[in-house]
Amino acid sequence: MTRQHTVTDSPYGPLTLVATDGVLAGLYMTAQRHRPPEETFGEPDPRPFTEAIRQLDAYFAGELRDFDLPLHLDGTPFQRSVWEQLRLIPYGETRSYGELAEILGKPGASRAVGLANGKNPVGIIVPCHRVIGASGGLTGYGGGLDRKQRLLAFENGTEASTPALF
Image (cartoon, rainbow, N blue to C red; front, side, top):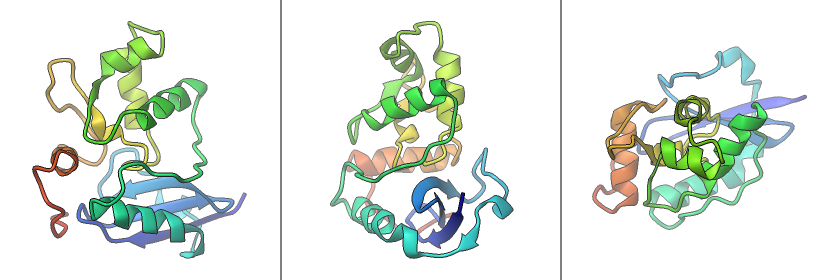
Protein backbone atom coordinates (compact mmCIF):
# COMPACT_ATOMS: atom_id res chain seq x y z
CA MET A 1 0.00 0.00 0.00
CA THR A 2 1.50 3.28 -1.14
CA ARG A 3 0.38 6.58 0.36
CA GLN A 4 1.01 10.08 -0.90
CA HIS A 5 -0.28 13.49 0.07
CA THR A 6 -0.37 17.09 -1.01
CA VAL A 7 -1.81 20.31 0.36
CA THR A 8 -4.05 22.62 -1.67
CA ASP A 9 -5.54 25.98 -0.77
CA SER A 10 -9.26 26.55 -0.45
CA PRO A 11 -11.54 29.35 0.76
CA TYR A 12 -11.94 27.25 3.93
CA GLY A 13 -8.25 26.90 4.67
CA PRO A 14 -5.59 24.48 3.47
CA LEU A 15 -6.83 21.01 2.54
CA THR A 16 -4.56 18.00 2.90
CA LEU A 17 -5.34 15.36 0.28
CA VAL A 18 -4.18 11.79 0.90
CA ALA A 19 -4.10 8.95 -1.64
CA THR A 20 -3.80 5.21 -1.12
CA ASP A 21 -2.37 3.45 -4.17
CA GLY A 22 -3.10 6.56 -6.25
CA VAL A 23 -6.79 6.84 -5.21
CA LEU A 24 -8.11 9.65 -3.01
CA ALA A 25 -8.52 8.31 0.53
CA GLY A 26 -8.53 11.48 2.64
CA LEU A 27 -9.33 15.17 2.58
CA TYR A 28 -8.51 16.85 5.87
CA MET A 29 -8.87 20.43 7.06
CA THR A 30 -6.60 22.12 9.59
CA ALA A 31 -7.63 21.47 13.19
CA GLN A 32 -10.08 18.80 12.03
CA ARG A 33 -11.39 16.34 14.58
CA HIS A 34 -10.38 12.75 13.72
CA ARG A 35 -7.51 13.99 11.53
CA PRO A 36 -4.98 11.16 11.35
CA PRO A 37 -1.37 11.81 12.36
CA GLU A 38 0.61 13.51 9.57
CA GLU A 39 3.14 10.67 9.50
CA THR A 40 0.39 8.39 8.11
CA PHE A 41 -0.13 10.60 5.04
CA GLY A 42 2.82 9.19 3.11
CA GLU A 43 5.29 10.99 0.91
CA PRO A 44 4.55 14.44 -0.55
CA ASP A 45 3.59 13.95 -4.21
CA PRO A 46 1.01 16.08 -6.04
CA ARG A 47 0.65 13.73 -9.04
CA PRO A 48 -2.26 11.56 -7.78
CA PHE A 49 -4.35 14.67 -7.01
CA THR A 50 -4.57 16.57 -10.30
CA GLU A 51 -8.21 15.68 -10.96
CA ALA A 52 -9.29 16.05 -7.33
CA ILE A 53 -7.77 19.54 -7.18
CA ARG A 54 -9.35 20.47 -10.52
CA GLN A 55 -12.77 19.40 -9.25
CA LEU A 56 -12.31 21.12 -5.87
CA ASP A 57 -11.32 24.36 -7.64
CA ALA A 58 -14.42 24.09 -9.86
CA TYR A 59 -16.60 23.42 -6.79
CA PHE A 60 -15.23 26.47 -4.94
CA ALA A 61 -15.73 28.57 -8.09
CA GLY A 62 -19.40 27.54 -8.12
CA GLU A 63 -18.98 25.58 -11.37
CA LEU A 64 -19.28 22.02 -10.01
CA ARG A 65 -21.98 20.52 -7.84
CA ASP A 66 -21.24 16.79 -8.01
CA PHE A 67 -17.78 15.30 -7.60
CA ASP A 68 -16.88 12.39 -9.84
CA LEU A 69 -13.77 10.86 -8.33
CA PRO A 70 -12.78 7.32 -7.41
CA LEU A 71 -12.42 7.05 -3.64
CA HIS A 72 -10.67 4.60 -1.34
CA LEU A 73 -12.73 4.81 1.85
CA ASP A 74 -11.52 2.74 4.80
CA GLY A 75 -14.23 2.12 7.35
CA THR A 76 -16.69 -0.37 8.73
CA PRO A 77 -19.51 -1.56 6.48
CA PHE A 78 -21.92 0.70 8.42
CA GLN A 79 -19.64 3.75 8.05
CA ARG A 80 -19.28 3.12 4.32
CA SER A 81 -23.08 2.85 3.97
CA VAL A 82 -23.48 6.21 5.72
CA TRP A 83 -20.80 7.79 3.54
CA GLU A 84 -22.52 6.47 0.41
CA GLN A 85 -25.77 8.10 1.55
CA LEU A 86 -23.92 11.37 2.12
CA ARG A 87 -22.87 11.36 -1.53
CA LEU A 88 -26.56 11.17 -2.50
CA ILE A 89 -27.55 14.38 -0.67
CA PRO A 90 -27.98 16.96 -3.45
CA TYR A 91 -25.87 20.11 -3.54
CA GLY A 92 -27.47 22.86 -1.47
CA GLU A 93 -29.75 20.47 0.45
CA THR A 94 -29.50 18.96 3.90
CA ARG A 95 -30.65 15.82 5.67
CA SER A 96 -30.91 15.11 9.37
CA TYR A 97 -29.09 12.29 11.12
CA GLY A 98 -32.49 10.70 11.76
CA GLU A 99 -33.47 10.91 8.08
CA LEU A 100 -30.25 9.15 7.11
CA ALA A 101 -30.87 6.47 9.75
CA GLU A 102 -34.37 5.91 8.28
CA ILE A 103 -32.99 5.67 4.73
CA LEU A 104 -30.48 3.07 5.96
CA GLY A 105 -33.32 1.04 7.51
CA LYS A 106 -32.04 1.70 11.04
CA PRO A 107 -34.51 4.27 12.44
CA GLY A 108 -33.01 4.22 15.93
CA ALA A 109 -29.44 4.72 14.75
CA SER A 110 -29.22 8.50 14.38
CA ARG A 111 -26.36 8.64 16.91
CA ALA A 112 -24.46 5.92 15.06
CA VAL A 113 -25.05 7.86 11.82
CA GLY A 114 -23.62 10.94 13.53
CA LEU A 115 -20.53 9.05 14.65
CA ALA A 116 -19.98 7.62 11.16
CA ASN A 117 -20.54 11.07 9.67
CA GLY A 118 -17.87 12.49 11.96
CA LYS A 119 -15.37 9.84 10.85
CA ASN A 120 -15.83 10.65 7.13
CA PRO A 121 -12.27 10.68 5.74
CA VAL A 122 -13.07 12.74 2.63
CA GLY A 123 -14.91 15.86 3.75
CA ILE A 124 -16.47 18.21 1.18
CA ILE A 125 -16.30 15.58 -1.59
CA VAL A 126 -18.32 13.22 0.63
CA PRO A 127 -20.51 16.07 1.90
CA CYS A 128 -20.86 15.43 5.61
CA HIS A 129 -21.44 19.19 6.04
CA ARG A 130 -24.95 18.64 4.60
CA VAL A 131 -26.12 16.74 7.69
CA ILE A 132 -27.96 18.70 10.37
CA GLY A 133 -29.78 18.06 13.62
CA ALA A 134 -33.44 17.00 13.78
CA SER A 135 -34.48 20.56 14.70
CA GLY A 136 -32.73 21.94 11.61
CA GLY A 137 -29.85 23.35 13.64
CA LEU A 138 -26.20 22.88 12.93
CA THR A 139 -24.58 20.21 15.02
CA GLY A 140 -21.02 18.91 15.20
CA TYR A 141 -18.73 19.04 12.23
CA GLY A 142 -15.19 17.69 12.18
CA GLY A 143 -13.97 20.81 10.38
CA GLY A 144 -15.68 23.15 12.87
CA LEU A 145 -19.16 24.64 12.92
CA ASP A 146 -17.96 27.89 11.33
CA ARG A 147 -16.76 25.98 8.26
CA LYS A 148 -19.97 23.93 8.15
CA GLN A 149 -22.08 27.10 8.24
CA ARG A 150 -19.95 28.72 5.53
CA LEU A 151 -20.07 25.63 3.27
CA LEU A 152 -23.86 25.43 3.57
CA ALA A 153 -24.22 29.17 2.93
CA PHE A 154 -21.91 28.86 -0.08
CA GLU A 155 -23.99 26.03 -1.54
CA ASN A 156 -27.20 27.99 -0.92
CA GLY A 157 -25.78 31.05 -2.66
CA THR A 158 -25.80 33.20 0.45
CA GLU A 159 -22.02 33.38 0.79
CA ALA A 160 -19.59 33.91 -2.05
CA SER A 161 -16.33 32.01 -2.05
CA THR A 162 -14.09 34.28 0.00
CA PRO A 163 -10.46 34.18 1.07
CA ALA A 164 -9.67 31.62 3.72
CA LEU A 165 -10.33 32.66 7.29
CA PHE A 166 -8.69 29.56 8.78
